[in-house]
Length: 247
Image (cartoon, rainbow, N blue to C red; front, side):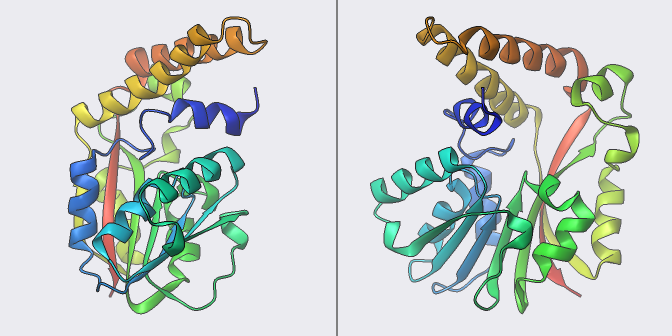
């Protein structure tokens, strides 16, 4: 199955697409301290959950969402229409690295999509270019909550150098000229909800479509992902969402 289609199905029950609860999405958005007319950019927006929620906090604001997946953007558009926000959300099907905005933004989001920029440091550099001087950059990325085991590295197809610890993540931000003014560290409950939803959504789809030519493959992906999480990186990989301002 097409990777983008697979990801869209996997996020059916968790459109936030990161191990962060709705309560904490709202807490993070409140801590950005933006004005009602804020201009928002979500890079790697997926189904638009973060951008749409931002628009509920900024009732006179507008948002741009950028993503490569037509499946995710289709769902984002449907969600915007359902919530009466379609006139304030513009969606762009393109590579976030090459997105050229019309002016700077009050708030730039990149949560769970730092791979598009080569990691956390690259996200600070590229996404940060779109933030106005007094704006906020909100970035969510992984870190080693505990020393990585071989099982965790194998499950994530990662090397130990792909992530740092939490202190290292903050250090990277500060060296790049960004000051953390708030952060949320995802707890085990949030991680479990995200991972069970990810694998469970794929499993549901495969069981509901037994005659589909991709059903067996999708079920295998779900099983392998779940096994890698439970037997590999659960409680090893952490996730931090940082609210950053320029120093």
